[in-house]
Image 1 (cartoon, protein in one colour):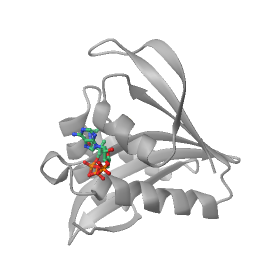
Image 2 (image 1 turned 120 degrees about the horizontal axis):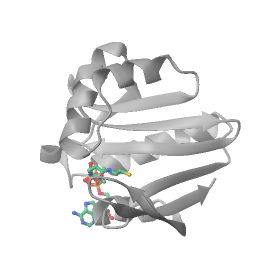
Image 3 (image 1 turned 30 degrees about the vertical axis):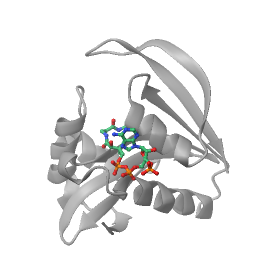
Length: 146
Ligand SMILES: CC(C)(COP(=O)(O)OP(=O)(O)OC[C@H]1O[C@@H](n2cnc3c(N)ncnc32)[C@H](O)[C@@H]1OP(=O)(O)O)[C@@H](O)C(=O)NCCC(=O)NCCS
């Protein structure tokens, strides 16, 4: 499925909050998302199927370093290449901004997300013990040099 990917608008906040709730045990609220949209270091790219947001990536950029906060695709649209399109677009977006390295944390058990990151060349660089709550779990640290 081909989606169009672009920067978030404030109108997208309720839908992104809905996908957060669907995907994560400690989701960002609509208010969180609205305040992050205002922040100069936060970025969101959303993937649209027609008018409907079906996925997104949130990340921070500080100087030439980027940290992925979340990437998510709504349950019913997974496994159809949307996550890959989001990461492809994200990588060219941050390269244009002069970013040199990307870091992220991911639950050790999150096989689909780890597979997605590895597909784009991310390497495992460490483990953060008991990083997550609900449930408690280690984070795998991954990075990509651009
Ligand atoms: C991770 C996620 C964004 C992937 O999105 P997607 O649209 O399903 O991804 P794609 O269809 O583009 O698949 C890309 C790659 O991911 C991996 N992958 C996706 N689903 C997988 C699964 N069920 N099992 C194993 N690997 C999987 C594969 O490596 C796949 O590559 P391939 O198609 O060449 O085999 C999606 O599963 C999701 O939203 N998960 C819940 C939110 C989440 O945990 N986000 C990560 C937070 S750090």
